[in-house]
Image (tube, rainbow, N blue to C red):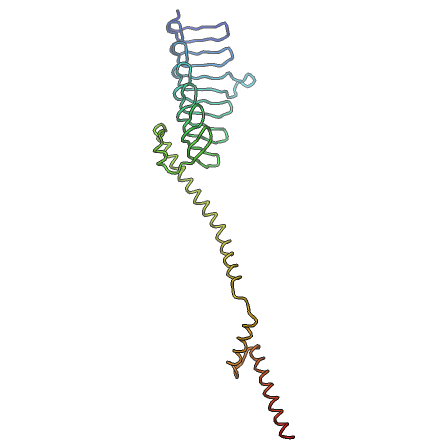
Length: 265
């Protein structure tokens, strides 16, 4: 029965080199599978347990290319505790695991620059989270099965959530910053809408005022001219008033001429 340092080479192509306890790997060692995947770290009762690193076999055509790998805590062959999983694509998860699933608080970073920080449940985004987009926009709120459902309105909503104690201390500050940014963005959008609407409304009111001005009334205008002519007899008159006065003077002159002719006859 192996006890202490040793090695095993199995018929299926797997191998182990490291420490043994009562015939099983226990302590530190390296296990290599026939397919080329490896695990280097701690074992207990022949299983991955404690700190360790698993790495997928490199691409045989490009051995320097990134491969899937995990480094962190194990519990009897399961990723359990905290760790970092990196994909060959460049995406990365850093956070909590429970029995091989992302569970609790964790951060996911995509190669396009997007970042999710928040709660996970059975491997998916679920609970309070903060999404950061490559253009700088941030959204904080409640996620349900990988879908953003509702935005956080106040920091009190975060504080009152039953999971708030499971977040790292700096996360609350990031949520506050996000809420401030969202408020500033909303105010800026309202300002832009107002700047668009105000000139339009101003022109609209001016147009309405113009249309509501009293329209010329020829009858009323004639009355005004006649009354003005009577009131201003003997004074310098405007053209419409002068025309009315001149007509009256012509009538009077005709009457005087007729009277003179009657006397001569």
